[in-house]
Image (cartoon, rainbow over all chains, first blue to last red; front, side, top):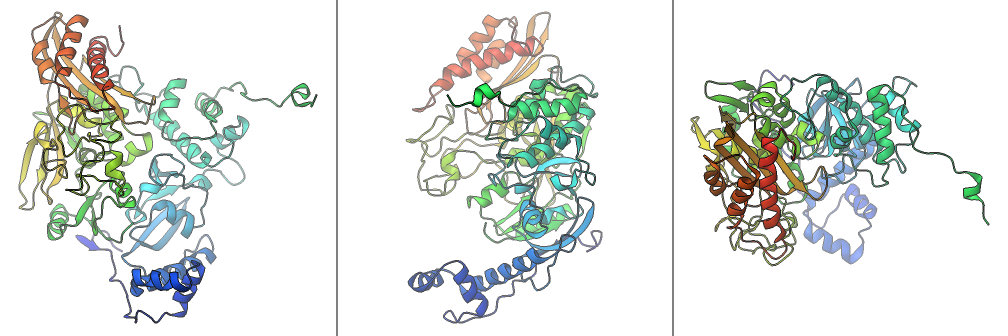
Length: 273
Length: 331
């Protein structure tokens, strides 16, 4: 699709809704309702509430998703998808070009997880409050749960899967392991993507709310603990690994080894009396 | 989320035309608020017109002051050398809001148009005159700890959530918009947002097909003595209980001009005009700051659960003014 040629591009295809008698279901629709566990009386009720055309679209989406699941990582299969309001979008994800048709409603997070098999980015709250979905788009950390995939035309996306070089972990990844910067690990991909981008923001001299003398000319910053905490406040950790996350980030940011904040238990602490 | 048509606008005129043709269409910029509202089924547009590729993203000096492109990101705005140097109050206010990730996505124009975070507005099972006119205000007799103490009506007690807008109110910004007729006009910041009155469904005075193109901030002498203080439940990444944008123009210890605006207390950024008037010509002392704060908060009408905001407001105004005088320090 040539960006230069259109003024206002109608990215949507008209929904392809076959006229179907409300009491006649296709095999796909039958399968869908079975999978959803909707039988008997509840099926009749459900069908009363949902237009069959809508159901057939849903069935096609489900099939398309199954196909996408089966697709290999480099090849995002989109054939035979009859999406309502489909948008064709091409982007670079972790260095490789991806092109796919998405429902206009699909977030970047869902596109990464469900269509590209990149399940590192996590869906925590899905409302932009927890930061578990943080990815780096065009060099900036953003929330993929509040980014529509359709808006990512031409974007350069880096996820947690794209940080390591072959088998060599990104320094922030290595530091998180060394300092035990997680417990359950669910927020970790977002924490790490956020921290990686934070390093660049500090080099650029970007200010934060706790920066003293905001009028001073921007230059590479040595972040205090308070600065790191403030800048990481968009990433929540319910396990409370914050002190170790701080140590990990500080070690990479300063290049100086930080004291380990954890230790193995002494045998006296674990012995049963 | 309900289905919607997505279009990508490459020209302003086409974007405005698309919105004009469909009263259920909305512009899409950073998306940090509208996408969330659509997920919650609070916003139900059937078309989004993506304006991110339009060219209103510059920050520049103009003859009158500084112009912020409506599509410049919050992060870029807060860190632009022109803004940090000349409008440190605005940089601080932006950086007090949301998180690094959200500020990287959110645009200046979108920040103005973000909607209240009142929990009754967000919960479609609850009554809310803002979301569904005529259903009543759930917060009025409900849990209203986060709500307004100034300018509310029986119809709505919600507060405007922005930090950036509190600084823009203090700095007498102007909002430039382009209408469906292609003409641009300027709206004084004080007239941009509305008090709820009888139509809380309207947050501001924009028409459906108006597109914000830039925000202009006139030259001022406040850069040396300004501070944005935000008081909240958490140290970071939380909406304000009370926030204060304080800016002083001081010469020889005397206050030549004062600007004070409060966030978290009203349906729009609340200019403390009484306090400003009182301070003009007076000595820049803590005693005068306290007296000004006292005077302003007298008009507050708290609800059942937010009475604390009156005392908090007094202290926050006095402290913000003190910090504005002391380069961000409390003493």
